[in-house]
Length: 186
Image (cartoon, rainbow, N blue to C red; front, side, top):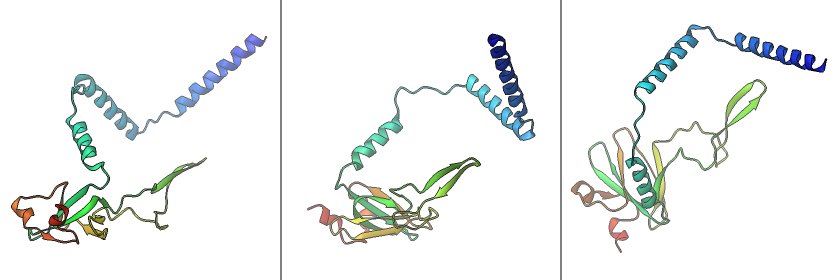
């Protein structure tokens, strides 16, 4: 009797699960289009699988970046070009940092029985931000530690080097911060 009952319960569970899965099928046109895109992608991957590389120049470049900038006290030479094509420069401790970078998470995911929602978190200064100011950079002068901030975009670009540049456009750049290239050569 127990075996029949267990078998009957298992069969009912399987039927219920099957009915539930059938009820969840999405027969909408959006679902059909999504399925068509996936089938197309699967066929393209089968016919044209991604190639395999023996060596990654991208990984090499990233590792070189880490070797270059992963040292305490490394100086950066930031050359800024304005809309007139004129250059100026800052000498900074380390790399310039985008103002939108944070040490703490900027958001978290709250879960409840009704779903998940992304919630904004306050920044280090206790206020909320829209995550803007990614075109503003800051850092600290190489010899005085003075705070330096600059923006890019709207006809202003910056070029970052780990050594002073001697090409004519950079060699004639105007000193914008307290530290000069000559100060760092001593």
